[in-house]
Image 1 (cartoon, rainbow, N blue to C red):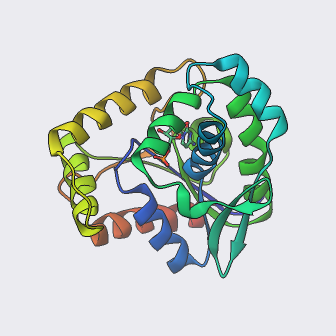
Image 2: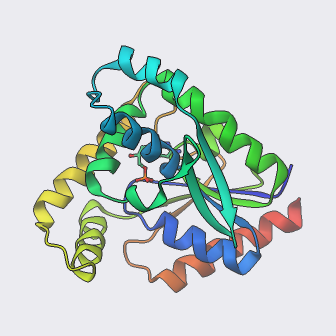
Image 3: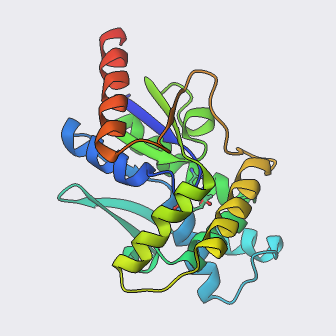
Length: 224
Ligand code: DC
């Protein structure tokens, strides 16, 4: 097993920004597990499957192939062999990913992909259930969160920077809805693992969060 750092938390808490920075500084591989759920959501969306049609989704899971590859340390998601990473960041794909992530067929399909990488490589892996289900033996576990309003403000700024428009109250409501769905689903719900360290980034800069997590990583590396 490589050295595994698990970062879980709700949408918009800054997991990917922080995990990417951390992976670069430590020379670890960054694994964005949300991209796997998004890839399946994208596939089902294109096939016209409704997010509440569990039977069709379970069937479609059997016929689709998803894989992660790394080029110069950057993750690419292959759907049936084709790199679809560029299509995964839209809000609609994220919401569909959250909706389909409740199904056992979806979670089972993606579990071994995540576990296999962590067995072979030193990883910073972010998601919802990494510390609790995917990598229960990770040497370092972080639960990264922030208030819903702060997360909405961050998303809103990202949209503006991309030249897109948004309504901050709508974004905040979407975030709260997604939190609720991710935290209350029956299988592998989002929650802080018993042995995870809580980092609340509401009042913290990115540099401060990275520094706080690096402290935890150093502590875990000394213990390992
Ligand atoms: O992190 P993200 O926004 O890209 O994730 C999209 C959705 O995928 C998220 O709302 C729930 C699901 N997901 C999950 O169930 N388990 C993970 N480890 C990662 C994501």
